[in-house]
Image (cartoon, rainbow, N blue to C red):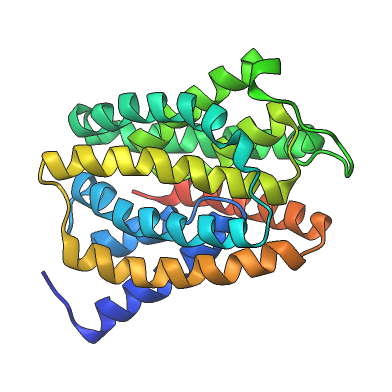
Length: 253
């Protein structure tokens, strides 16, 4: 494995940008997965190794949102249960499914989210003052979070968009609190996915930890940005990242 100045800088730099993108929207793995593959990793190994950076990035962001009192801790368990169950299913599917399944799944998710953002933007960006529902009040939220967990366990790229659609779309959280709960959910099923990938010896730890140093720094900065940002700016950032994610899915070989 090549650990030249170029590849180390590439991993840290893309990790930093991905940490910001993943915390404020989603799709940062569209940067980190190609960066890992530049080092010669096959898609399945890159997909597994990428989870190291994602896991530590989520730890950093979760702590940041909690300190800023933007994480609704009462809702964590009800939101995490369905996403974790889905994550187990998705992680096992990722370990045994053909690599050729990754791109179509990613492409479908990205284009679907882009269409939602254009046709019904209020679905993922509720008006200010909207009172969120509890999971127990919205059975559809349980189903949406379970599906998000399956997707996140299977392929990390773009899972933030799926979780935003589930949390803001069904439970009507504002984007800041949606992002906070999104990071907790991602942390949970990424931990499960890591366990599966470790069991199958699919993780390369050195590049994974180098990448993680960048993602943690990016997520730390992004939490501060999210708290201070205008809600409309967050909405437009999310839209732009969704379009970029769709383009990346289309152009990736």
